[in-house]
Amino acid sequence: MEVTVRCHQCGSALPVTPAEESAQIDCGSCRQAFMLTFSEAVRADRQVDRCPVCEGGDFYRRKDFDPKLGVTVVVIGALISAGFYYFGLDLIAYGVLAAATLVDFFIYGRLSDLTVCYRCHAEFRGGYQQTAGAFDLHTADLLEPEYERKVGKR
Ligand SMILES: [Zn+2]
Ligand SMILES: [Zn+2]
Image 1 (tube, rainbow, N blue to C red):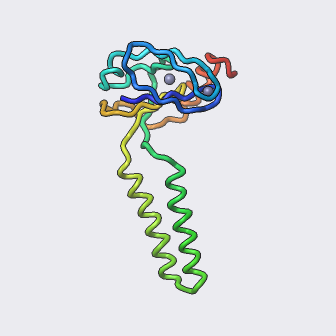
Image 2 (cartoon, rainbow, N blue to C red):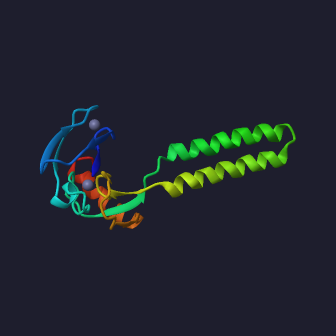
Image 3 (tube, rainbow, N blue to C red):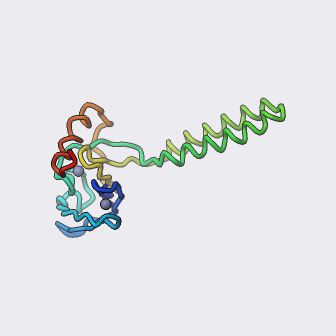
């Protein structure tokens, strides 16, 4: 399993591979130190039961999707489409736009799932069994402030 710790000071993503039971990592950008405690299930890539960063047990599942990539495909498609439209080739213009949307769906459908911690936004990638539910805004509204208070951001 690979864990991506989200630095609460500067927002940097810090990739860690759980090997030892506990580890200390330093943020590469702002030098914030994190004490991580990996549960046995996390180290064995079996299940995400406890967050190594905030020790929370609430997670949601989402597609491992880079939103920038999806937007880029659609923007490029729209630009090409606009070019055809300008020259009066409406049908090709619509075709290109439809193709870009399809490519976007295709990328999305092929993505694997990852688990995210509600509190500290740590991300978990691996072959473990996905048990977390879909993102719930109400839960996030409750748990995010709790973590932010804990790390002194509120
Ligand atoms: Zn940082
Ligand atoms: Zn967490």
